[in-house]
Length: 164
Image (cartoon, rainbow, N blue to C red; front, side, top):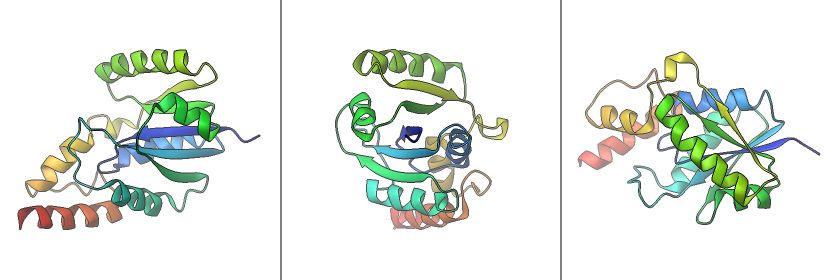
């Protein structure tokens, strides 16, 4: 049986920090399913389908990665349905950990077979958040060091559309 994990998030957009955490996860798990979560509390720039295509393109060279969209439901149940034994969560700072720790305990209660694995990104990405990347890009700033070239192209196009 393959060691399978899910890596959930909004990924709006998918950053180099996300990619770094995913690459670290692939050193532990044979397969990682990136699960794009729909979050009604977040205003997304990209549709779920655009984010899915973005991540598929960026992760194509890695192998062992697939991308799914979770439209509704509990993450713990999603993990069970997909046969995952772990949920990957990237933590950049202490406040991330406090929230993620609470969520991991709840997920463990809902699905005792799943373990949350916390991974820290490379120090170069500890201050990179999708919301900041979007804001800087919308204001015309250079975010090329923080996203894959494909994501940068999609981001620039989306920024142009938003401005017109």
